[in-house]
Image 1 (cartoon, rainbow, N blue to C red):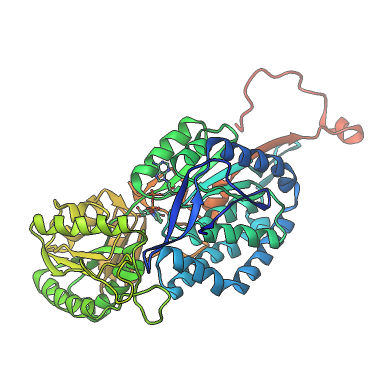
Image 2 (image 1 turned 90 degrees about the horizontal axis):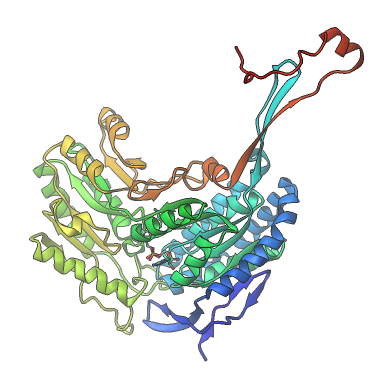
Length: 507
Ligand code: NAD
């Protein structure tokens, strides 16, 4: 019988009451390896009931005790790292080592959240007026929700849940239905670490479950990561329903190659950043922008050589550079883009279509694909492909390259490779993109900075993780207090001024 991946609510596995289910594949073989229930509105509401009931006690638990749960959680995840990475790899299709990286980048945010007692401190000013002190405190919002994509099934749920629960909220995660096992495993480990039942809940589902979360008045904030059309839909619906929302979307990340760059270094960087995880990363580089024809010709030659050497195969087999895509639908979508690129007149230097792995003919594989002479009006330049497809879009000069990255509708990440500090400095100051790398191809900020794209890569104002996350998941209460003196001190202050009908000012 096919394994069923349960919901996790109130500290236990919960069987579905509704009828709809989805297949969970093993992308390396193409086989269905499990089924996942798609929650009904009533099931989501029942989970919110549980999270709501658990929230006051969790909020009243002092921040240091909450942080200690996270400390134990870090140890448990490290204890089970290989098991989690194998599970992740078998449902997503990224290699085992890359799956460990997915878990590790999430853990680093949990490590940052262990500093919650410090991060939640308010401000205090004494004597702002006679006998008057002002202070602020950060309080949790209540029940908050996260809706996450398939491509980082450990990292992104942890980026969101870590700061949310460290701040005293309870949490409902609606992970991707394509690789839902790791989120359930994380919920089990949170419980083992001492997190009270009902603080971290996982409800599987699709649009019905998401709509139930983003319209329920008890959900105070929604954190989303996924494709741009869904990010925009969830952002507008959540805020129309009175919630805080931060919704991160798709990307088309450029890597600018200046004529003075070390082209071997650039070509190596582009292999990892373009094809790692089969290009299914929001920070993947999908557009290489060499500056000048000479740079472009030399780069195209080096990339063509390296692409031919990439090893593609089952995700759990050692020595693979990347594994299969997540589903057959994903393969078909990317294949469609390759055809479109050809139809629009781009030069195909490497064609990944029709790629298969012996013994795994039904797996969702695509070989590395490389296009040259791609122009800014082509669909393969404008749209996110989210597959192992790298395009070379040539720029005549630095200003044109800068404008290409700045004018693109997405603004997640961008990188420049150069030996010229002045060019790099000008680029970082002027480019209209949220995360910038200088001689670093995938500039994902470390946990104690914040992560967020600009333009149509992000909706909302605060970023993910770092200090922004603690702002997002708390509300600030500001107290102005005055303690009128009694006795001798009171007499020294003189008689009361009586009622005042003028707004107090500092003038
Ligand atoms: P997706 O938008 O298809 O799904 C994301 C989540 O939304 C899932 O939980 C899914 O169940 C839910 N969802 C899907 N359709 C919905 C609908 N109609 N209504 C309500 N909810 C719906 O994205 P994906 O394919 O899982 O992930 C890949 C995308 O995520 C890419 O576009 C990638 O760039 C983006 N991404 C962005 C970031 C970032 O931080 N900007 C990080 C990782 C991934």
